[in-house]
Amino acid sequence: MPELSHRRRQLVLAICCMSLLIVSLDNTVLNVALPSMQKELHATVAGMQWTIDAYTLVLASLLMLAGSTADRIGRRKIFKIGLVLFTLGSLLCSVAPNLESLVAFRMLQAVGGSMLNPVAMSIITNTFTDPRERARAIGVWGGVVGISMAAGPVVGGLLVDSVGWRSIFWINLPVGVAALLLTWRYVPESRAPKPRRPDPVGQLLVIGLLGSLTYAIIEAPSSGWTSARILVFTALAVCSLIGLLLYEPRRAEPLIDLRFFHSAPFSGATVIAVCAFAALSGFLFLNTLYLQNVRGLSALHAGLYMLPMAALTFVCAPLSGRLVGSRGPRLSLLVAGVAMTACGLLFAVLDAETDNVLLFTGYVLFGLGFGMVNAPITNTAVSGMPRSQAGVAAAVASTSRQIGGTLGVAVIGAVLAAGVAGTGSPRGAGYATAFVDASKPAWWIIGGCGLCVLLVGALTSGQWARETAHRTARRLEKPTGAPAGGQASAGSRA
Image (cartoon, rainbow, N blue to C red; front, top):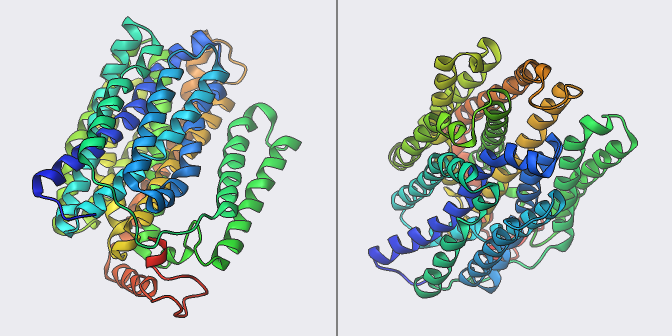
C-alpha cells in the first residue's frame, strides 16, 4: 500500500469504521428485538440462540479464509464484496417469512461480515505503520463498538416499538451503500507480496469444530446431554480439534500458524477475546430477555435501561486505546477484568436484577470492563509480530472474538433454557421466578469470564511475556528454507 497523507489515512480509517458500525450495530439492535421476533416467529429459546449464533458461527469459521483471500487477490476488492453481501443479507433478513429463512439469511450476512472486519483491520494496520498512531486508530475502532452499543439498544427499541422488528435490518442498507461508494473512491488496493496458499482441509476442520460444538451446546437442553445426536456432534468437535492440532503444523502455509501461540501476549489476547466476548454476548442475551419477558418492558424501555452499560463502553473504549498507546495493555486489561468480575458477582450473589440501584451498578461495571478490554486485544495480538503478519494476527483476534460470542450465547442460552424448561409462556406466573433462578449460574459464568480476563491479562502483559513475543517474531521472520518446524517464512503468509 502506498504511503498516504494524514488526511487520507483518517478517511480510510473512517470508511473501515463504517463497516464495523453496521456489523456491531446489527448485533446490538438484534438483541433488543429478540422477544418480538420470538413472539412473531413462535420460536423457542434455542431458536433465538440460532438467530445470533448462525451469524457468529459462520463469521468465526470464515474470518481466516477471508483474510488470506484478501491478502492474495486484494483487500479492497474483498472488502467491497463483503459490503455487497452484508447489505444484501440485511435486505433479505427484513423480509424473512419464518425462523428458518431468517437464520439462512443471517448466514449470508455473516459471509459478507467475514470479509469486512478482519480485512478492514488489515487495511488499518497497513495504513497506520507507527505503533502509537496505530494504537490510537485501534482505539477509535474500539470506540465505534461503543457507539454501536450506545445507539443500538435505543435505535432498535424505537424501530421495534414503532415499525416492527424487521426494520432493524433496514438501517444497514444506507450505511452499507455509502461505505461501498466511498471504498470505491478512496481506499487504495493492497495485497501481500507473497500471500498464503489456500488450506481447504484446515478450513473444513475449523468449520467442523465450531459448527458441531455450537450445535451440541445449543441443542443439548432439549435433546439431552447423553443423547446419541449430541454425543455424535461432541465427538465430531473433538476429532476436528485433534485434526487441526495434527494437520496444521505439517503444512508449509497453514490456515492457523500454531507458532503464533508461542507468544504469550498473542495467546493471552486470544483467550481474553474469547472470554470477554462470551461475557458480552451472554450479558446482552440474558438482559434483553429478562427486561422484556420478566419485567415486561417495551423494546425501547429495555434499550434505555441498558444505556449505562453502553455509555460506559462508549467513553472507555477510546480512553483504553490511548492508554494502550502510551502505557501498554496491562492497566486496561486489569481494570477490565476487575470490573467484569465484579459485575458477575453482583448479579450472582446479590440478585442485582431485583433492585434498580444494583441493576444499574452492574450495568456500569460491565460497560467499564468491556470498554477497556477491546483495544488491548487487537493491539496485543498484532504488536511484536512482523508487519507482514499483522493481518493474520488481527484475523485470529477477530476469530477469537466471534468464537467467544458464539460460545457465550450457546452456553448462557443452554443454561437458561434448561432452567426455564416446562414453565410455559414467558408471561406465565412461574416463568419469572424460574428465569431469575436459572440466571444465577449464567452470572457465575460471566463473572468467571471476567476473572479469566484479569488473571490472563496480568500473566501475559509483563516483561516475561514481551520476551516470548520477541522470540516468536524472530522465528516468524526466518527466511524461506530456514529451520522453523517445517513451516514457511513469515513473508509467505502475510
